[in-house]
Length: 64
Image (cartoon, rainbow, N blue to C red; front, side):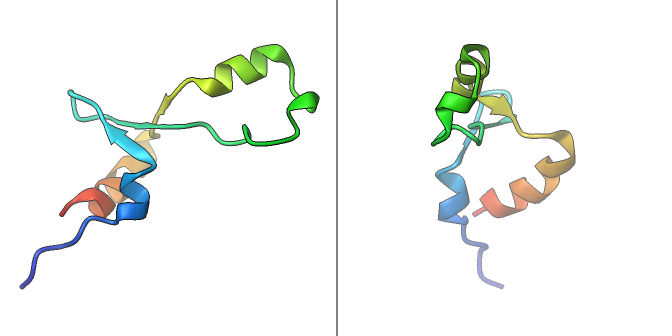
């Protein structure tokens, strides 16, 4: 059976940390910024961890 290929589109959106956790960017940042508070915009700039419920599925997309 051939090796599974990494889903490159997903690999570009997620980074694996040194401890094996998955980091992602927030959504809702590209437009309509005037409707958001300064606090919201600052917090959306930071990266976030992928939810525990999604990690199993996301790792399957990355194995390759």
